[in-house]
Image (cartoon, rainbow, N blue to C red; front, side, top):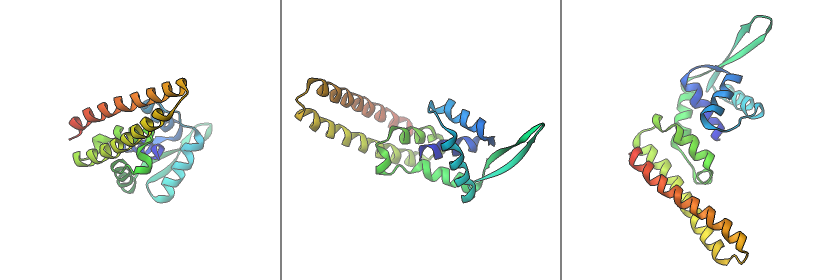
Length: 166
């Protein structure tokens, strides 16, 4: 779903053709996006009325398709940004895709997304603490301790985001 969020956010900036859109998402997120993910998502958006697809002629080449977000697409983007369900809140890519779109949300919507991520990170920390306490292998304990340290750092970061988001 993070792909949907990032694609619609880029299309909300301006129309793009597929290759440009893929490059824009990669450059703004650091995430690789394959054509096998891009074009099925664009097809779904077109079928749902979230984007329009227009053929743009090119000299000596087949036409390229330019995608433009619609009002339905803008509403869908807002809904995706404002909602981080518990089953997705533990996925860093899902959270970061929404965080990148915080400028499109009202403060209370931002705080709800941050609350969902905070709950997921807290649950992860609790789970890691239990696993670490029962782990006898020193290398596994080391790994669990590091993952727990990263979760603690993220909790601190989330707290700083709350002050900016509200």
